[in-house]
Length: 486
Image (cartoon, rainbow, N blue to C red; front, side, top):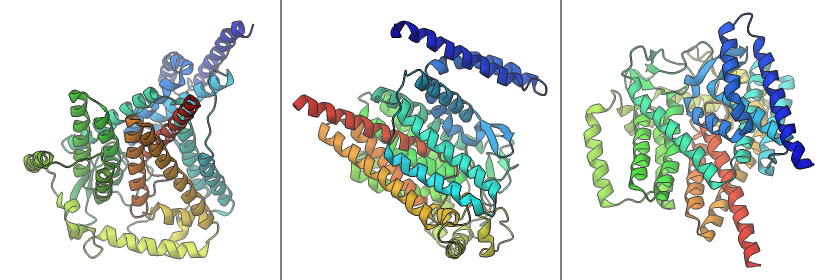
């Protein structure tokens, strides 16, 4: 009886969801008839995604690297809409429907609950925040990040599913990095210099004409690729390299190895065209970890090939590339942006001392203006340090909760890698170590360069989700092996 009624129940729920979506889209017909027509067509295409939420997740992951280029506009004063968000919303709805029909079961990790506690603490700090609007915006951003993370490790449960998702993500990511190299040659791609991070109304992506360090390195053209900032682009290139090296080690086919190597070359193109010192430091941090883990092995032949490739690329290097290769440009005496970072960190610490327990409120940076005066940066959104930013916004309580979450993630990924090594599982070992390396570099760079809790890093949250999936698979394999031995 149960088996007979299950298909009918599923059909009724899917039909109901379809007509609810159709009625919702009809609300736009008064002002936006073209949007209504597109919505009707889109709803027909959504039906397969409702039946298979994992397909929706693949599409979401594949569009994550598009970042700012995928923005379609604002639907509410604090909420914009993008291609990624559309796929994510459809995937969330499909996942919820399948859970309701008991076609899927929900997975949970208590470690993610720690991140949820941080989010709830942030919500509590809004009661006396100086800027409630930004606080609510931050609440939405980080709330959706948690949802995205949970969806990743719920919908990806097998090695094959994980591999499809990673391949989709790495392919599109490498393509966006290659686009960053082409971007500087495209007509109309140049955008004005950004002060701080992206503000409402500014161009979303392009080649930024930066003169902030005109006295030392001159005016430079920094590609942002498809991201909001050249620093995000430069960092993202480094975070992808360990994953590509892991995929290269796993495949026995020369063609696939060549494709992974081409992906690494695209990462290097994105790094150089971003002219990002943050990106360069990310690569510098990752490189020794790659050597220690064995993901990267240096041989005389490889060194010679790299040297030849470097010499051949010299004519194609962008003007101002010395910005990232000159060690002097990493000193405060030589760089305006570096010296300003020291001022920001000093101001942030003094601001934290004013409100050490709860901070100025989630997503709120306005309190720092009492300690940091600079007329060229009136729209300051970050102090270029995740941990100081968290201290300002949510106090010492928020920082301790967040640090505990990332400690749990690092420990989880190391445990997964150890289990895979004991099991002799090359797939799990290589990918677990790759994610662990990327996360470690991400956390280190977050202390000195950017605020990764809000600035364009859904790519890293996807990799964190992959790490949880790898851990879940390792635990299942360990239990199966123990059962077999018994």
